Image 1 (cartoon, helix red, strand yellow):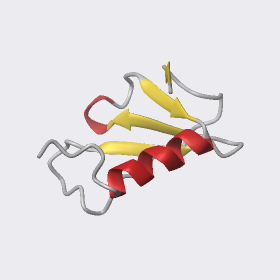
Image 2: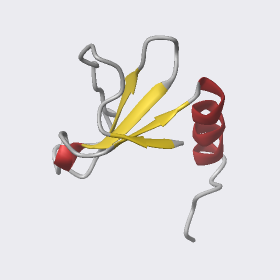
Image 3: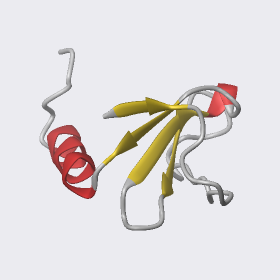
Image 4: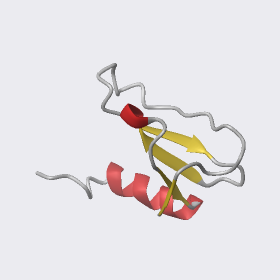
Length: 72
């Protein structure tokens, strides 16, 4: 994962989970041309962006689904 201020030069289409609600504590994701993914904090849309290769993002999502990041 690499910190970025703005990946690429074209605007990205940022989306968030429908489970997020409207409380503003969300992570937004965008597809970067070529298939990589960008993530940002919805509270700071002009702040830093993390970019992941397709493989890194797939591993991250699989870990989240498997509970790898659970604090319980």
